[in-house]
Length: 417
Image (cartoon, rainbow, N blue to C red; front, side, top):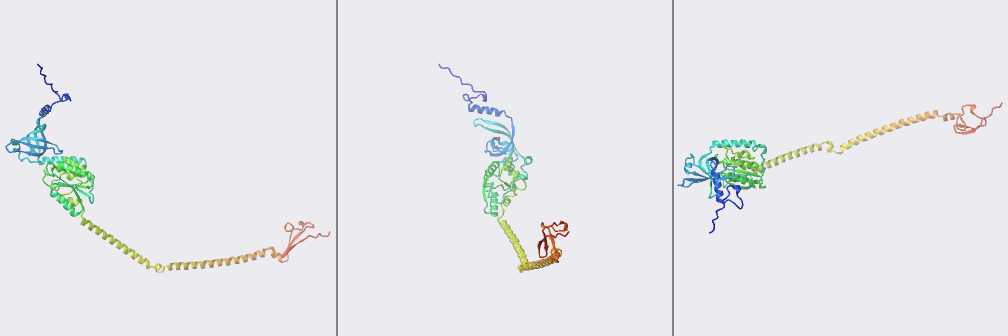
């Protein structure tokens, strides 16, 4: 008879499991349930995404979503707890819930067993928004110097709006009325309720990556304070601050200002005002161009008239009436100067001639030739020295005698003893 083999014991701790010795799913679910069951009752805040309540049932089911990220948990609550609330619980409401975490082993899901449900009051929400506003402002998200200018004429406008909303119609129609050729890239999303933040953020990221979109408009046609809370959500505000494309906020509510208005590059009071701020008016631009053309024409006409008057004035001057007049005057002056110069030169030549004649007469008067012409003679030695003394003359020396008309040789005569 074969002996009965006892089952192998399972590991006590998760760290003891191996590929050869794993836990079955049921044991893991039981372990998780035991761990979660040790958690104490806690308070948690979120936004009601869905309320499921059937007549006659003592338990209602809620879906509680995080207000900043797309994460939710199932909540079970007794209908008597919901009936005890002063205001009926509606989808999209912000609440704080006192609950005990629990784990459903069969489904393998975590849920909350609610004990109390309290709506978050408007005053508390305002205080939280004011605190968030101060935090974001201290980070510089609202600074004016980080805001980007809008293009004068965008090629394409990215529009984030509600599905078939009046805000979409206002922006598109008014923009095309001002500039018929403008193009739109429209993203219809939820602009109210728990899906607003994730859908608007996803549409913003999609349009921001489209290089043909020059400006993005986030618009909604106003609403109550609770309806506008998603547009003050921190995740959405930071997504707008990180966008590369300029963003225009056109929520259309003047009483309550969502934080989106502070972080956007431009705030429009209404969707219609957004259309006026984004695209220029073609009729105004044409009128401005026409005015500019008229100013240019008047300036050009005035300049031409001024130049024409100046030309007429120049042409009326004598020198322009007879262009040779200036040459004639200068020629006459030149002729007069030439005559004066000729007269001066001739006078100088005459005076110089007289001086030469006078000097010639003086030279002739002082010249030895004139003395010779009076019968005198000059006696010279053979070497050309003039005989000044009888003692200088040797006997039989040939001397040269120069007279007025020629010369001849002589020898001295020896005196008788």
